[in-house]
Amino acid sequence: MILDLEKFTASARPHWDELESTLKNLDSNPARGFADLGEAQRFYYLYQRAASDLARLTTFSAEPEVRKRLDGLVARAYAELHSAREAGDSRWRPYDWLMRTFPRTFRRHIGAFWISLLITVVGCALGGFAVARDPEAKQALLPYGHGEMDPNKRVAHEEQRGGRDLGGRKASFSAHLMANNIRVSITALALGLTWGLGTVVVLFYNGVMLGGICFDYLAAGEGTFLAAWLLPHGSIEIPAILVAGQGGLLLARAVIGWGRRVPFSRRLKAILPDLATLIGGVAVMLVWAGIIEAFLSQYHAPVLPYGVKIAFGAVQLVNLILFLGFSGRSKDPVAATP
Image 1 (tube, rainbow, N blue to C red):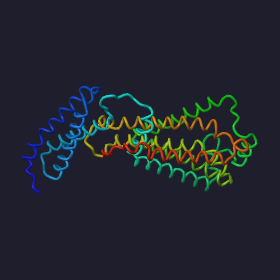
Image 2: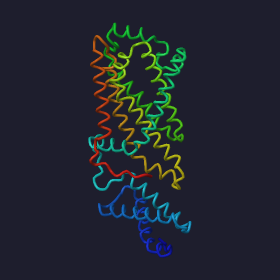
Image 3: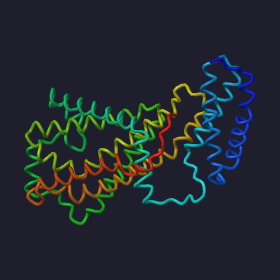
């Protein structure tokens, strides 16, 4: 099909001008948003039409200035559509945010989550391999004194007293765990500004530590204790760190830009709502994990049977997978590729 570029440009230009005018109005008054549903629908129509026009022009030798202008308009409109600007009632509803917005945002960027998981798994494999090849390596790799611990002696000691004797300090211990894990998560996300390198390091090192500890206990024949110790809180805590890494990788993609001729400020604006949602969900998950670690994970047999703890952690993990995979799915928006 032969495209008459002059005729095509003349007929499409009024729509481009209207889209540009709408964007200027939104930029000049960000708090205004769209006046009603009709205005929002019109804006979406103009965006779709401009994107379609751009796709057609890329296959022909159109004037560079025309393509450059249209490319910028499409990018700005995309950023506006995905900046979570809501028409009408914009009150925050915690239940709706947690049960719908958070899992939908997680699924919309599931690719970044799989990369986060892969980096951590590779770290786990390396940590386990390093401890297997050189038992002395655990002193350098494992945190919180685990490098100097003998798993069998630790398990015997824990079982003798039934778990951690926190006395009246359970609440403060739980708060300490929450604060530490939330700090690590925010760091993993924020380091996406280093083109993702910092996020990769945090995920990889956490994997190395986890893999080293797991191998150390498994090699000592303490797999049941390990599962009962880690599963209750780890079934929430570890996925939370992975989601934080997901956010860091999403931020890294915005920093890099992947050849898109869009200013960083606009790329960042497009993903900020999703980043806030992800880190907010991570915070909720880690608060719960901190409570579980302080009030359940630290108690061992005979005070609390291992089977009960393992079953609790397994059920919790299954529920988390179902929640992130299906909650709010009936209202999932059509995913768009930036």
